Length: 207
Image (tube, rainbow, N blue to C red):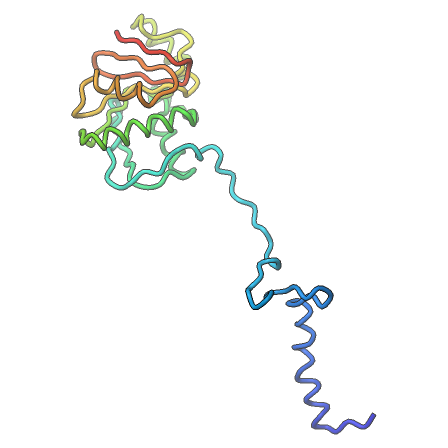
């Protein structure tokens, strides 16, 4: 076939377009980037979602919520941004056994219900400070405390990262006790200077 130089150059210039067209359009069924004039997403790979089951139960916190203050170390933890895996790890560290400096992940349900108490305290217009008296404890720490205080259980939920003791500025222990009972699906104990929450069977008591 006789092809002029001009036609030959024109054929070369459109060849790359024709070659690339196969990656954009399926010539057998007509599918591709567009279907009936609407962009298609069939060509996109699905990206595996990050596993966030460990924090999925923890609600988002709006700006201005109370600040956690550790009653023993005086450390503080701001709760004014969404809870991500990073934020959960910060909470785990904050609630560590400060005597042994050992970290144990806090149970998801406990974290979620404790944050619910924070939310409701904020809605009541209570003080912006929540004092944490105890979080995770090692067995050694728990035994040491038990020898000094008969109220400390031998197999405490604190040992498993499933309990927290706290108080809220601006609310009495009885008010915090009732607030915790309305949020908790586990155990709630009322003491003179703090309230205990755990993830055990649903029950309540005062001392």
